Length: 154
Image (tube, rainbow, N blue to C red; front, side):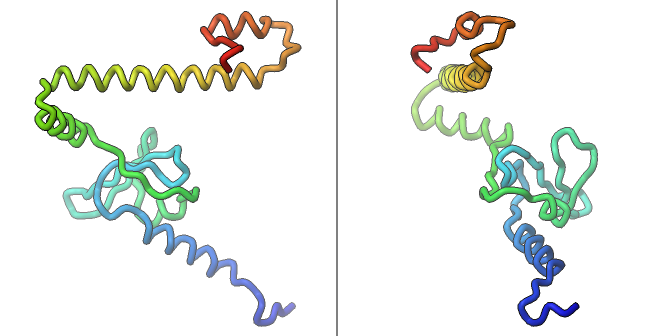
């Protein structure tokens, strides 16, 4: 069975996808959020100069090629701050603002706590909205009250 000139070489399509994924992968070592927006990878150069790509919770080491094959999503790679980078940024900001480092860290911690609380409230509200109103386990309003969610505000 001949497909003619209009046939699609699926193997070539996959090779092209891998090539694009490999080309768009980071070239500077660091911790990155992958294109799916949920997965992370730690890219570094080993003492022998070989690239290593580690995924949290996975004991295996990957290569640029295997990461490109597993690349899933349409978002760009996002470089995450490592602890040394974060410490240097905090020190830089404290110096620029003339603020003691411990004061800036406390301010950043309060911002992070507020963001975490907001995210948690949104997640609780989302779960509460998805829960069937006819559930007999716990009345919906009681469940919302238990988690401090005001249903009138959601």
